[in-house]
Length: 494
Image (tube, rainbow, N blue to C red; front, side, top):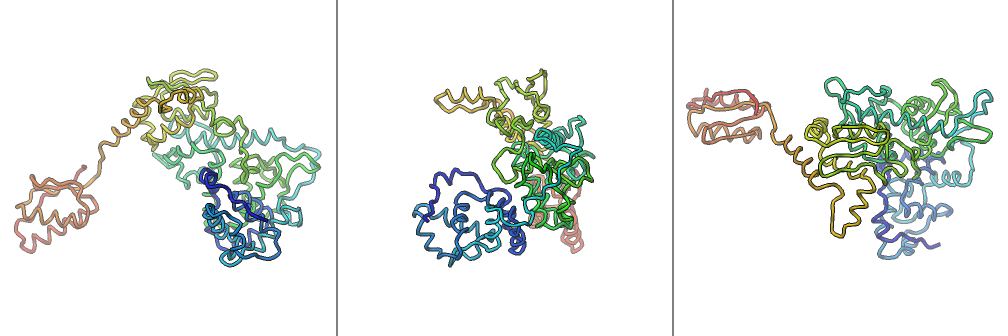
């Protein structure tokens, strides 16, 4: 059966590899083989692969024996051979193809499990074990699960954007706060956590990318928490293949069949909004939309998401920016308003409209929190109102989406703040002769500790770290009779 590799232009403009794949490639073959024992894991990983890689797997899945590599290579048109080779390399790094140099054949464990996932074979409970129906309490509806997931997720984001503003938003759990610090999305400043430059960039991502960024950091902490990485990954993949809001005989999933590692994960995943439980000691759970879409292309939150990045929120936008620095945001969502409050001076608020201005003080406040000028401009561009995009599309010549005067001024305010840089050190002066000055200066330059020099006045400024060496050098030269090599040493800032 011939294999059709996508055209080059389609590959070039296609989506980038999923963020989880490089992490999986870094794992040992033993760990991946254990992971491939679960049909749900194999199905989830198959979903994450690029189209060419999925096509290769499907062509080999039902073959009972391996085929020569050059046989399949002959099915690929010459101009797209590059993408075929890249697909083979990717599958090899994931140990899905054990030895593609001679023959092509899937990893036996992966092949068996993926067949079971597709045909429904096996009784391992890899896709979750349904719990018996509870007649006293009905199952949570999809609306309840969506509301719960959205509330938990927005609690995290709202806490990030409200940090350092004097507001008191709902505080996430200690586990979430620790994860935000480990991810360097927030950092302790003067006893409180404040959003970092990376954290602001995090807000520009889609909810799906945000979720996986946190989960990858969660996976990176597995070893220090003495958890089984394969069990953690298996549970995440299991959740991604479960049904949202079951309506048949069974409504929830049983926690009894989970391993000790997976039971310990339930508390963490509740805090992130991936799992719903009636109470912490419940023996049943329900996955939310955040969990069931982990390995799919569907939006992880309802289209009315407050993040403005799922559904049509990101493509529509809600911000209008004028050349006089006045900003109009057509939103009634407190999270979006809180994000704008990081770099906008708010003037008026209406039921579905926020009016403010971008000022020198508001931008300097954002810069002091680690947010860059480019990130502010990127946010305004990403969430520009459709009317602004419409006006740009009407112009025949190239016209920037945002007013050039506003963009330039934001960057100038950043340059103004970064114009001066303070650094502690020592000033070396009062050398007896030009020769002594040059001798000590040469030694200091060899140590790479000179920050400033003035040959005319025979002085230079060195770092705090290099002071001990320079002072010792001067004292040794003076003791050895090097003439008036003594220098006045003055500590200070430069």
